Length: 364
Ligand code: ADP
Ligand code: MG
Image 1 (cartoon, rainbow, N blue to C red):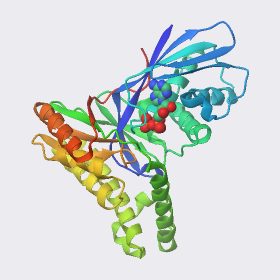
Image 2 (image 1 turned 90 degrees about the vertical axis):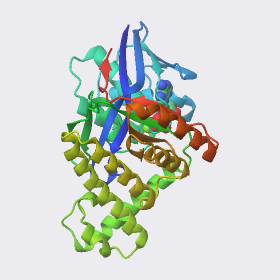
Image 3 (image 1 turned 120 degrees about the vertical axis):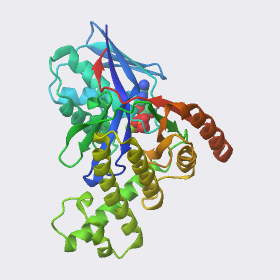
């Protein structure tokens, strides 16, 4: 019996930049999905999860396609299917998934399941697993088998996270480097709105289309850039559409904030980093318009706590999670005040978790 673990992730800064060819700065977190693998005699794989009653037994000689009836097992089935397509040997086994990572909250539980499945299966037969390759492989499964057109950030962070570090990912060139995120007496809190994310897919696609349209217009006079993150603030008046201007202003200003964040984190200047988080939230709220009453309530309440250096929504928006960077002595006050205020305004109970920048996928 062997055990493997893949973490969830939060993006510290650089929101809605992945599909615009920019750089993003996520950390893998200490919450995640554990897979326990038990070899079997017959040519089958059995999939079980402690968070879902549905389980599945498949014959490894069969072919698999996405099927709604397969519920959560579509994620591991997509991985198995693609491993087979690429001629990787798969040993018959039972995989039991156990998780303390909230699902469907923007902390990338789907990527954690994909990465831990692929890592666990490959570990049975192969000595070396190339992690950047693994990230791209699992992203492709999420795009093609599951049908979610996500960028590379989630799988990359889950595979390559590193304790006390953030991962600076260049989503255009698909490479990475580590940036120190050693926060000493400060704490990284993840605040979950617990709001069902119904709008998210349509709005996500709408923003992607707006960015494509803006790049098309900018290209008519500035053909030298490859993506929107390379555009200049001075070019905004090429766009004579106020909405597109605001969308592009977010993309350009957010990329500048990521660049600045990387500089200040090298010097452990958490105060400036916190201010960049606040500015990122304001831009996502006002220019990119992907926040919402729930996320704004959590973020704005957290920002008012003494000892909180910064807070922002993280992930695609419209629900999901926000993060806050707060001194350890103010954690209790933040949790109490934010929870009370959030319930009073929304009628929902939020959840707040203290998270640490942690290692990516590993054998336990
Ligand atoms: P997110 O990736 O933000 O958590 P998604 O909607 O992309 O949200 O993925 C959530 C889905 O991933 C769940 O609905 C479930 O199908 C699957 N999933 C995540 N964690 C587990 C788990 N521990 N066991 C089984 N399925 C899981
Ligand atoms: Mg997901």
